[in-house]
Structure formats: C-alpha cells, structure tokens
Length: 600
Image 1 (cartoon, rainbow, N blue to C red):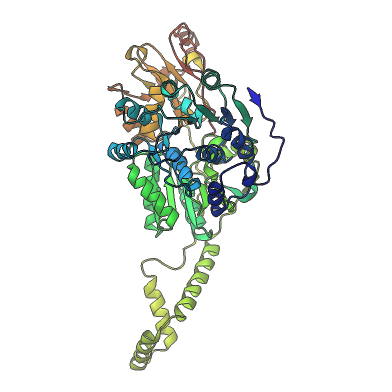
Image 2 (cartoon, one colour):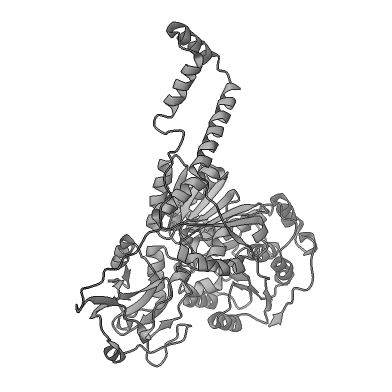
C-alpha cells in the first residue's frame, strides 16, 4: 500500500484536473477550496487507482470520490451503469445520490438512481431498465436487483464502499463481499472507513490492487463555527422546562432535536406542536416517502423543528439547521460529533446544546476532545427574561401592524368610543386581552424543579431481604449505562450476531454502535442494551422475529437471598470467548466486543 503524507497543498478545485462542467457546478454551489482528503484523493481516482480513505463524516469524502468518478464517466446515447456505490443506510444512500446529481448537474444526460429498502420496486426497476450511469444503494436492495437480473454489473468500472466500518457493525460484511465477487475483474475500487478493523483490512487486501491509502486529518475545523453549550437537567420535568425556555429565547432558523427512541420523537413533537411550534417526528417507523417529504419541508421552511433518532437522522443534510439540541444524551462522543455536525454546514455558524444529568458531566472532556471545541455551561433564561422578550415581541407586532392599512378598524374603534364614551387606550387594552385569553402573554413564576432524591428502604433487622443481581457471561458486568437482556434464540437456531444487531437496530431504532456485548449460547443469547429501555420499545422487541422465530427478549435477572452467593456463582458455566471480528472460537460461541457507552 502507498501511504500519502498529505504534505502538499492545493489552492482550488481548478488545480485538480476536473472537467470544466464540474467546476462550474462547484462554483455555483459555493465550493472554492477542496478539503485535505479531496486534494489528496481526487487525482488518484482520476488516474484510475484503487484508494483507501480513512475519514470520518464531515471531511468531504463524498465529493472526494463523486467528482473524479463523474469526471471519468462515458456519457453516450444509451446510459450504462459505470459506478456502483454501497452505503450502509438508506438515508446515506439518498444523500450520496443527491451529491452526485448536484455535482454532475451540468453533465448532459447524467442519470443517477438510489436503490434502498422501503421504496417500491417499480420505480427502481423502471430507472434501471431505462439506463443509469451511477447507482447508489444499500447492500440488501442491491443484492435483490442483482439476483432478479434487473441490475447488470458487467459494465461497472468503479466501485465505492462508503462507511465500511458501519457495514461491519450492521452485519453487512458478507453481503458486501458477495457483491464484490459479482463485479468485473477490471475495475477501480474506493474504500472509505472511519476506522480500519481487521476484517476491513482483509477486504482491502483481497479486492484492492496496490491501493493509495490516505488518512484524513481529524476534522476539528467545525468547532469554531459551532457554539457548544450544555444544560444540567435533572429529570424529565427539567428537560421540558429547558426546551421550552430555549425555544422562547433562541433565535433559530431550523432546529434538529435528538432523542433516544421512536416513542420519544412522537411524544416531544406532540408537546411542542401543542405550544404552537411547526414540528414533526422523524424515526424508522415513518414510511420512507413521508420521511423524505418531512426533510423537504424542513429545507423549504414549512417545518422549523424535527425531532429525530440517531438512525433516522443519519445522512441528514439541511443547510438551514441553525440549532441542534441533544434532548437525550448520546451514548458516545462519536455520536455527539455526528449529531452536532448537522448544523454549521456550508460555512454557516451553528449552535449545539446538550442536556446532561449531573452524573453525565463526566462525558464532557471526551466530547471536547472529539470536537476540538469547548462546551460551556448555558444559563437558561428566567421567567422574567422570557416575559421581557414576549413584551418586546408584542410591541414589535403592534409596530408592524400599524404600518399596514388600519383605516377600517380605526373608524370602527372611533365610532365605538363615541357610542360608549370609553377611552381608546382602554379599548386597545381590551383587544390585547382578547388576543391572549387562551394563551397568556406572560408566564407565571414557578420554582425550578429540585433534584430528585432516591430513597432505599432497609429491611427489618434479621430479615432475609432479597436483592436482584444480573447474571453475566464470564461474571462480567455490562458497560456503564448498559443493561443485559436475554434472547431465547441461540446457536441451535442458526442465530448470528448480525441477525441480533439488525433486528434490534431496525425495530428499536437504536444505532448499531450502541448495541453492546453479544454472547451466543446453544439455546439462547445475551445482549447489552442502553440503560432504561422504555417498556413500549421492549414490548416491540419481544415480538420481533429472527428467522421467523420470536426473540422473546427480557432483562436477564435472577433473585437470590442477600447473602454471599460466590460459591454458587463460581460453579456457573461460562461461555467460551471468540474474537471481536465475529469468528467463532473452538467453543462455537460468539462474543461481540462491547461498545463504549457514555450514558452514565
């Protein structure tokens, strides 16, 4: 492999050897200076080399492969598939396909199609039949089209594997390798991944020929553009007070609020809508066409606030998002960086606000290291501050209204005052009161919520009080912020880690990186999930099926007297370990390395 040291610097896109039509599109989009990974990779892809880009979101990697691949396209009368891009999620597939269309807008007859689950086959089949140049898809749907014969790969000259490590986490690696085996021998490959685990390295060694390897510098340039703040919120009521005061006090254009579960998106959207805000939920249960429509409404200004889960918001790119609020704390600093990266885009400034429980303050240093920026404590506006703002806003509304034609109402009020002998200022006051009968202009002072106390009832002296302890593989405890659950399906049922990750990620809308340790036994399995799983989500998972068999998931607990049970625990049969890559060791069990959790 060739390692590039990012030593040289290029001033503009016009120095990279790109076609004039592409440069025109970039200029119209406001892009003038390439990022480091674009400067390094574009010349190699233009030359037809295989490349490996170790890059995180926000480094400009999409343009790094889209621009040179568009440049190398052969645009004839009959479009033929020449570029295939694999993405782990449908949101990212849509975003990448839109980027190809934007950069190639000036190319005559360019045809790009995204292929992903949740969309009807008829539209995709029609596009493929009519001919396309660039295909961007998720592994499952791409495999379906290959097997149907609707996607022919014989003309593919370039293949891109985007976010390969995410493919690994979601259990798609076998699918990716199958697709790679169907491609022509003569092709160039671009592989992108934020991290490079052994299995990704193995794919690169097997399928890439003498690749150029470039590691993008850690992207901390967004920190100066994004003001990062945190608010201490001890309990649900404190969160609700905080979000309402922030919405009152902050001047925002578009806002994205991150919550943990699908149910939370709906509940918070309903709450904010009742307060008069234009908002909507975005989660994995919402049909794809409705999700796309909601994103378009956010872009156009018909919606101002979207409440989303991590999974649903992955790949979301809306320039007018001025604020990102982490209503529920992310599970790790990488997820935090991805979330706040939804604002401060296209050179704009942005604001990121994080709600933290007091015990979660320890997460701040790692988040600051990840983003390269300081996260300062935010002082919430008081009731008096908000009331003062409301009064000023009311005055501004009066001033704006007086600039219009008020002649009809002026005559009406004058006549009313003459008939009733009531002074005009009293009539104006009565009208203002009428306006705010349902929604008072001023808020009432209320005490801030006090920290909740936790009380533990002690049993009577000499009692055999019982306590709950968790049974864990290898006598280990789950990571901080995680709980262990048992699934009544195991190796005898043919269950693999990817099946468990996929089922939970799809049904609970939990990002796969937040699914922790997995151990597979003969007749059952265990998995570590984020602490405090809502009951309604658990009920959904209990009915979720793998290979047409119900998971019957439940929290793994046993009840023992409050006494030393060490001897019994030592006799417990332990699962045999395997490597973190998912390959079974001699015992036949699987052990998935726990993901780091930040959830206190």
